[in-house]
Length: 219
Image (tube, rainbow, N blue to C red; front, side, top):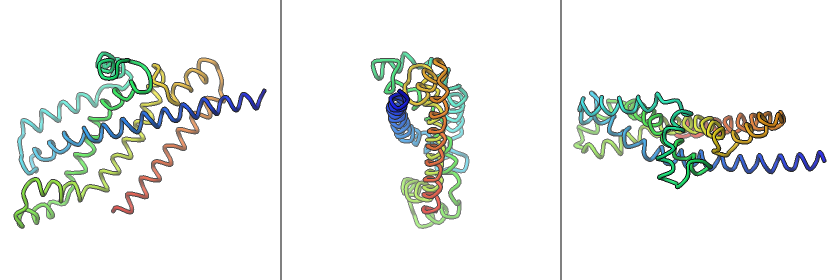
C-alpha cells in the first residue's frame, strides 16, 4: 500500500510540475516580448534618452506603476472576463497564463528599462559621433550592451512567476500550488506539502544558478 501511495503521489506531483513549467515558460516568453515595448519607449523618452518626451515618459511610467501595485491574487480575479475572452475559460493551466503574463509585463518592463538605461553614456555618445541613427544605437548599443543585465532580469522574472504560478493553483490554476492546497492543506497530507515545497525551492535554486552562470559568461 505504501509503494502504491508513493507511486501515486509521484505521478500527481510530476504532472503538476509539468503544468508549472508550462505556465512559467509561456508567461515568461509572452511578458518579455510584450514588456520590451514599453521598456524601449521609456528608455527613448526618458530625460536622458535619445528622444526625450516628458509627457509620454511620465504617463507610461504611471500606468506601469499602477499595474505593478496590484496584488496578484486580486488581479487574478479582476481579469477573469479577459481571460475567458482570450482562452475561452477562466480556470485551468492555460487560463492561468493570462493573469500571469499581465502581472509580469509591468514588472519586466521596469527591469528592462533599468537595464537599458544603465548603458554607458560614453558608448552612446561615441556611436552618435560616428553618425549612427537612433535605431542603430538602440539595437547595437542599448540592447547589445544590456544583454547580461536583461538576462539577469529575466531570471528574476522566472523566479517571481514560479511563486505566482503556485498562487494561481489556489483558484484552480493547476500546477504545484494546486497540489499543495488540494492534497497538502485540504486533505491534511503533510508529505505533499513538504515535497511540493522542496520541488519549488530546488527549481528556483537551479534557475538562479543557471542564470548566474550565463550572466558571468556574457559579462
